Length: 60
Image (cartoon, rainbow, N blue to C red; front, top):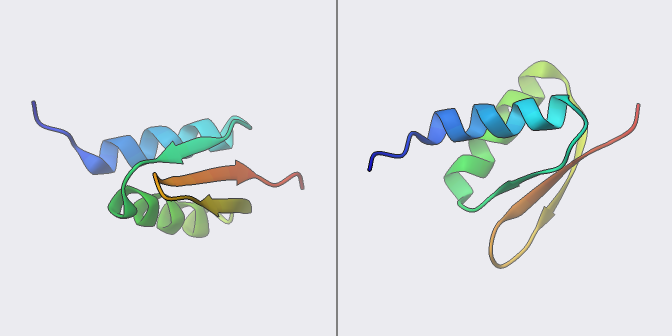
Protein backbone atom coordinates (compact mmCIF):
# COMPACT_ATOMS: atom_id res chain seq x y z
CA UNK A 1 0.00 0.00 0.00
CA UNK A 2 1.43 3.36 -1.03
CA UNK A 3 0.84 6.22 1.37
CA UNK A 4 0.97 9.70 -0.13
CA UNK A 5 2.02 12.03 2.69
CA UNK A 6 1.03 15.14 0.74
CA UNK A 7 -2.52 13.83 0.35
CA UNK A 8 -2.68 13.05 4.06
CA UNK A 9 -1.48 16.56 4.90
CA UNK A 10 -4.01 18.15 2.52
CA UNK A 11 -6.84 16.13 4.09
CA UNK A 12 -5.78 17.30 7.55
CA UNK A 13 -5.59 20.93 6.41
CA UNK A 14 -9.12 20.61 5.03
CA UNK A 15 -10.32 19.38 8.44
CA UNK A 16 -8.68 22.40 10.09
CA UNK A 17 -10.32 24.76 7.57
CA UNK A 18 -13.67 23.22 8.56
CA UNK A 19 -12.95 24.04 12.22
CA UNK A 20 -11.88 20.61 13.41
CA UNK A 21 -8.62 19.55 15.04
CA UNK A 22 -6.22 17.40 13.04
CA UNK A 23 -3.50 14.91 13.98
CA UNK A 24 -0.22 14.08 12.25
CA UNK A 25 1.63 10.92 13.26
CA UNK A 26 4.91 11.79 11.58
CA UNK A 27 7.15 14.83 11.65
CA UNK A 28 7.13 14.93 7.85
CA UNK A 29 3.34 15.19 7.64
CA UNK A 30 3.32 17.76 10.45
CA UNK A 31 5.80 19.91 8.53
CA UNK A 32 3.68 19.70 5.37
CA UNK A 33 0.61 20.74 7.36
CA UNK A 34 2.46 23.66 8.95
CA UNK A 35 3.71 24.91 5.58
CA UNK A 36 0.23 24.81 4.06
CA UNK A 37 -1.36 26.50 7.09
CA UNK A 38 1.27 29.24 6.92
CA UNK A 39 0.62 29.70 3.19
CA UNK A 40 -3.13 29.94 3.84
CA UNK A 41 -2.60 32.18 6.89
CA UNK A 42 -4.63 29.89 9.16
CA UNK A 43 -3.72 30.28 12.85
CA UNK A 44 -3.49 27.06 14.87
CA UNK A 45 -2.14 25.86 18.19
CA UNK A 46 0.25 22.95 17.71
CA UNK A 47 0.50 20.43 20.54
CA UNK A 48 3.51 18.16 19.98
CA UNK A 49 3.41 14.83 21.84
CA UNK A 50 5.51 11.69 21.83
CA UNK A 51 3.17 10.04 19.33
CA UNK A 52 2.56 12.97 16.97
CA UNK A 53 1.26 16.51 16.64
CA UNK A 54 -2.22 17.92 17.15
CA UNK A 55 -3.24 21.02 15.23
CA UNK A 56 -6.06 22.92 16.92
CA UNK A 57 -7.60 25.85 15.01
CA UNK A 58 -7.55 29.15 16.84
CA UNK A 59 -10.75 31.17 16.88
CA UNK A 60 -10.35 34.38 14.93
